[in-house]
Image (cartoon, rainbow, N blue to C red; front, side, top):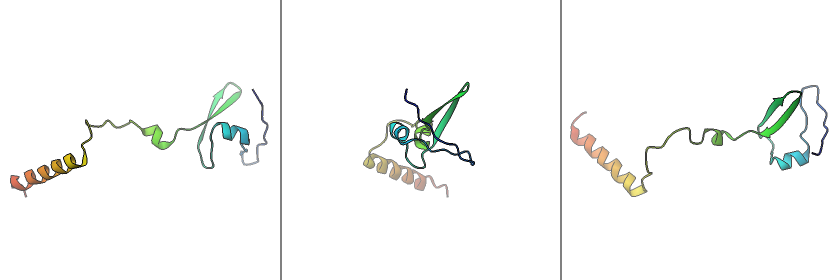
Length: 86
């Protein structure tokens, strides 16, 4: 394991060395996670907000193609109009 040393500023900030940023594919404004393990800390990229929530909502069946979706919409409108509930 190769070591890198950097200096902590008075504001508690430090620069992640270039080779580590490259290896972790970190870009400006990316979020990171620090995991504490005893007296050591591990740095890893945080998942994107999209990735973090992906799959959180279940779909309701097979997606319709554009024509089937249009037909279903028109049927719904027709039912609403003919039901007389206005």
